[in-house]
Image 1 (tube, helix red, strand yellow):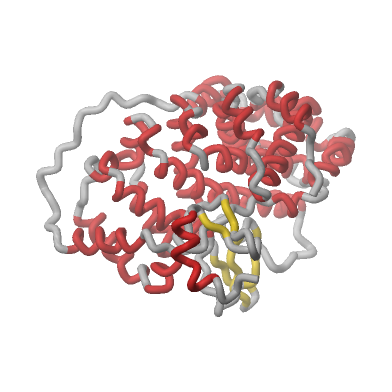
Image 2 (cartoon, rainbow, N blue to C red):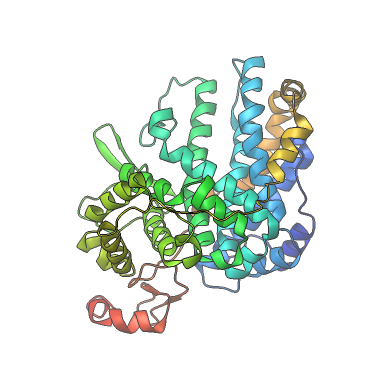
Length: 425
């Protein structure tokens, strides 16, 4: 497969990454920046899927650009919350939706690139103090899909198309679909942050255990499973970044569900997190309900969860403590979101009026044409992270004989050989 961009282009694109200004989203200059970031994301996906050296990840860290990518995701999220509703009030009957789609999709590009970077320990380290900004954004996105059945935001069409859908309805559909995809991607980022918790500040730990109850959020997701939908009497599952008709005979755990289970495992394995997490009666009750989900099929696919099952069993025998004392911590505050909100406060309607001209004007079609090459084969470059056939953790090595099965280590490959040898060819 040919590269999307050359190494020289990679260096140029990364060198020119800069923070977007919220009031300039949708301008010609911004679309050029979006195009470059999307091509970097596509090339990084290609490199990871083929097991190549992850040059883009290394350069983004080396150039100190990772916090800027965090900024990009947060900036678009604020635009979606504050400016998009004003735009739809000013133009209640827009003629097209693609220009708005590109802006909304920019968040997907940013979190997709972040997930690849944060798979590695040095990627998490490169966040620095902006880890707090990213964690807040991740929690918001994941919570959104966890309660989407209440907000009715997960109720978008997947297997069918409504032919008489208005452009406004299309925009709302785009928004909900993208928010869902961002939330699923953020589950992976949350897992990576839990995996590398020792590289994050005490403020992030406090967020995980006190301000935002990560274990209870995971419990909610594992119970409602928003990645499974019923539509027109067909059951769909969100797997490998797309909706597919669910095969009831296929018991393979989807990546996001594996990330949640492993994230919970990491949470209770980490002394740093476990010791600062108060087990109340409410929390204990919800954690105990997970025991029935830890069946043999799940444990076969994700063996480390045997330890989690043991932890939950011990917890069931433990009395809830009433004397828990939370240490006094000087907590840091996130910077990116408050800064953007303070910069543009009370200007949302003014920004919407200014953006209306180039988002829905005659030049908008030239923008779509200029980006057509970038999006022509987008489905082909959706990230497909390889999972170890034995322990279900992210894997970089595959069987040298059949080239089909992936493993995270030699030990897992040897352990799994008795099962794998029957299909290896």
